[in-house]
Image (cartoon, rainbow, N blue to C red):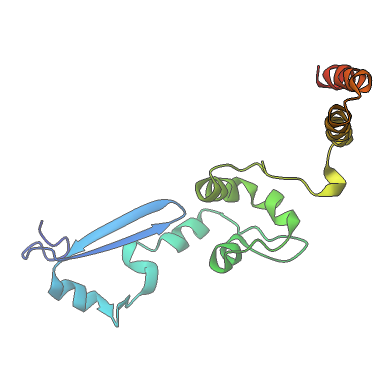
Length: 155
């Protein structure tokens, strides 16, 4: 592959940049790569790919800010932490794909804290324990009543 800058030498360096899901890449030879970069960074920062940030800002894209904690989406991606609970609502459209990519799902499917547990489930589990105890004591009359009550609740 030829260098995309000089079009003379073989490309040996591939610069790749992704901004807001848009990937750009440039293949350069070693000479051109050393000319456009200083210490591993581009002389003109991210302007090397056509100044994507300023082009987006010029289109009227305004950065959202959480009205509770003051976080921006850039803050969240840089720190790797969401500022507060309200950020999930404000930045939800951009956070959801990231959360699904990391966790495989965007809905919680694990255990619930005690104050949020279903009372019916707690009652059902208590009845099952009573049934096991009744069977152990060989109190089959009580066990039959408990069994019927459990079946009724599960239906």
